Length: 131
Image 1 (cartoon, rainbow, N blue to C red):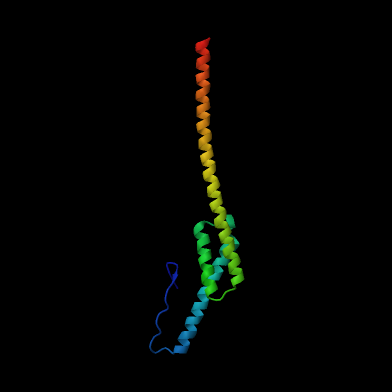
Image 2 (cartoon, helix red, strand yellow; image 1 turned 30 degrees about the vertical axis):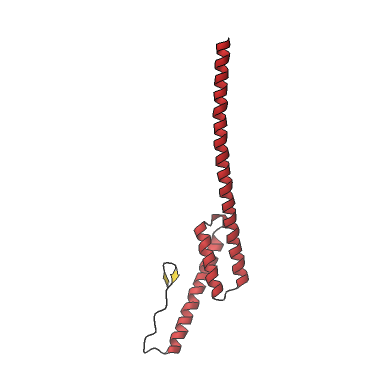
């Protein structure tokens, strides 16, 4: 059971319930929610290319891996997934930096082209005046 992405606290056991059966049910529900979370992570990883995962998707997958590790899932696989998400974040940051540099270079080139046109017009005007 989830409350806006956060695990909801289990309801208290009814007074007449046997504590052992409540614990078993709670444990079963707890395990079921983690297997559902594991299924969601693997579905996202199977159906989406790394480059298509946005920042929110990568953050969600990383948070799921943290939750799964706390529940005892294989840490080596989870670390691999987290490392892949980190690499995607780093690649996205690098691409953003390159895009900003490209935009700045294009602005400078545009300014230089305008200056060149201005110089050409001034040169033509001077040639016209001199002739």
